[in-house]
Length: 123
Image 1 (cartoon, rainbow, N blue to C red):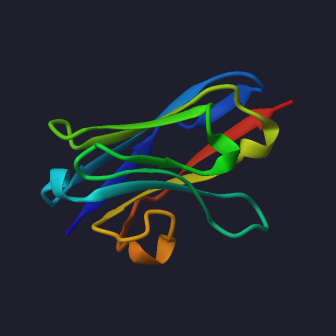
Image 2 (cartoon, helix red, strand yellow):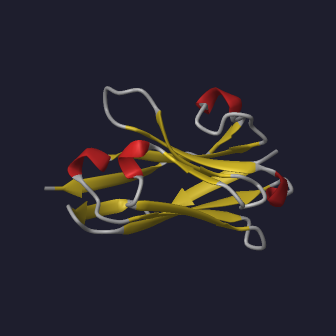
């Protein structure tokens, strides 16, 4: 059974930065793709970023390109999401997800999810 634990969320002012972490256990981490999604109140869960298991390819939603960076450490079994230049519209619960997927932006392809971490950006 795979377990994912996110951390690093919090309250930050617009223009600030946060780094989210997602620690995985229970499976060979290096063979799975890792995705970050977010869900704001009253909205559907949306894709944010992802990184393939070989770490050779990263993917970003248009609204975070140039501001967010996804990376992973296969030795620590951890994936990170560095978020810079945060905006109030980035406020949401952020989730990490893992699995071997075809379409990294498709939440339905991920079988394993973390509990989420709240990110709140004040204006």
